[in-house]
Length: 124
Image (cartoon, rainbow, N blue to C red; front, side, top):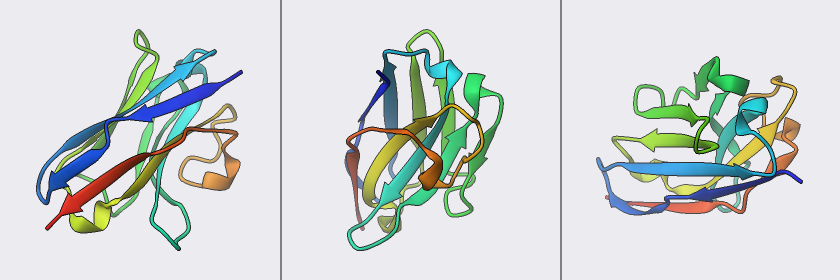
């Protein structure tokens, strides 16, 4: 069974940084495309970034481009989301998700396996 678990959220001041981790168990994370999504209360999930299987390509939402970096560590079976220059509007619950078709990237409806989420709070 595929499981992904997020960690690394927390409280940070505007302009600060956090690194989120998405660790997979039960499978090789490199066999899956991994997406990071965020959701605030009352809003639809928003695709933040995705990385294709084996880390071949990375995609970012315009709102985070040049501030966030997604990366892949095959040895640790983990995908990271490095978030720099955080803004209050980045505050949300962040989720990672996995899908094997390499098709959906920033579209949340295509993902099969989801973590429980990690909270990111940004103070102004």
